[in-house]
Image 1 (cartoon, one colour):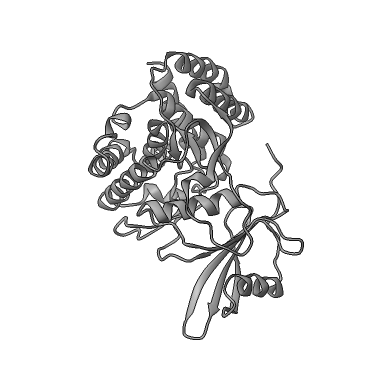
Image 2 (cartoon, one colour):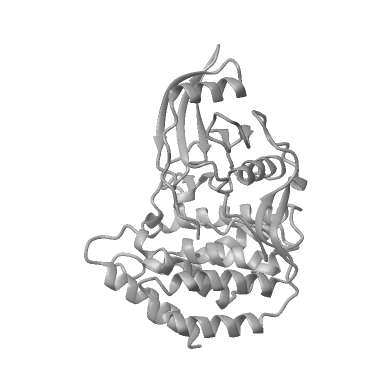
Length: 354
């Protein structure tokens, strides 16, 4: 895995140049760096002749791409093809001698930034609405005709300089594509289980390796690749936590070409909050989330809902592996980590022992 860099500071003079190159009338009023992973992300208050508004700039921390050019093009495709609430991309630049490329400039969307772990604190009605809307948006995402093979989604087509992407699905492709889903899934699982061997759950790794390998061998197709968000979680949304309304879906740099069921099962597990059920006041709400997501999916694309209607334990276990690998990043109340770990491990063993 690539070494993760630190976000870099971007001088106001450079920010002003970026703004004026995108829209000559824009003036920078205030720039505030935000904590959005390791990329350099700035919230920009800007004004023109008539109004003041808020934009965001997302830039590479070290000249490597980190999926930023693909993310800009993908958001443009989703804006053009779906009602998924993604930020409008005003301008993207893939390469520049003096600026922190690649980067793109986007409009801000409303809604509250909510911690990943707060999924356990949402009321049932709010979680139900969030899950139904997630099902609706996943059905739309999965219907975009952009990929024909499996793997990491990448961009293709002409380079961009101070211009918005066209929003054409033909600008998307798959890097190092696999023709067969079991081949792609085996590569994915190997990477994740290699990480798992270095996690706090490493005692489970040998059993998981055997079980996952057997599960891949037993998968029954056919498998059709779709755009899969995969990086589900409240941290990548803006929402109203009281009602569960999703007002923005952010951070699309980890998009994969996968079967729809793989993407769906990850969302069920991560929004169902089972990984936090070891907390004394949290519960496993996977059934609630699955039912609501299926409702939204069926209402949006009834012809393809069958592809996500049957739970697949293999995909759920791989979602658990993701949580176990990143467990150190969870913000848990003092003294609760052992109970949370025990519940996650118990859930995993219950699945692999069936």
